[in-house]
Length: 309
Ligand code: ZN
Image 1 (cartoon, protein in one colour):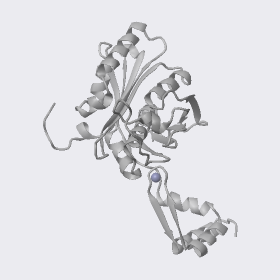
Image 2: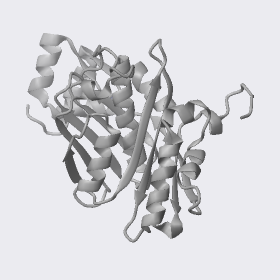
Image 3: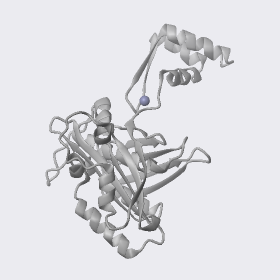
Image 4: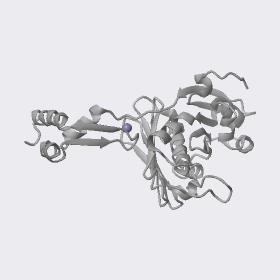
């Protein structure tokens, strides 16, 4: 490892890589998401167990978004009975990832193994949903029951049951004692139809030999290195590297449009009774404040559009 301390985007930035091996019969996706998950933690003020749980869901969304073309998006939802109260994350073709947990501040003891008890925070009874919106036809949603609430196992089961793709999935978030995210990332290796069973076994051994993905990332492993280790001996080639970032698609303009769509009567009541409005984006926790004057302008716009008087 190099010992430079200067920030180097190739070394420190978040990105994913897409690769194939064994003549295209095996494919792999790997990502570093340390900054994405830390930004989610900072914005939502998540407690460690939820930071880890949400970080895995954000990483899953980022990885599943690897195949998206412009205008497409993928959404991962985990709805379960744990105290985190459900999580949602989405990613678009430009590598913009965002997400939230319904209850970000859940305090739980460590698991008997001394780890953050993600399965307990998420809950073990529930479903994982994946919605792929290719920007063309109707979005497609598949679902599968949770296996453990640990997310990686749940996603493995989903990919097999709902998308008929045998996959090895590793997702991890390493949280500092102070709560900050130290390392985060993930790896998905998939067997395409016609893959050789010896090749598949080799992948399983490789992935098992990798150990926890966060440990590798914390030690400086890049997504390329994760992929090359997972696909070692199978003639891997990398097809694409794509930056990932926590970035929401909300804006003040979109919030204004949402207010206008409420109609004139509702806007009037906000002006006269509330003297303003405050809209908060669930995905990124950004708050958009509108004064009574702001709302009066939106009311004029609503009326000009021929909305309800
Ligand atoms: Zn937002």
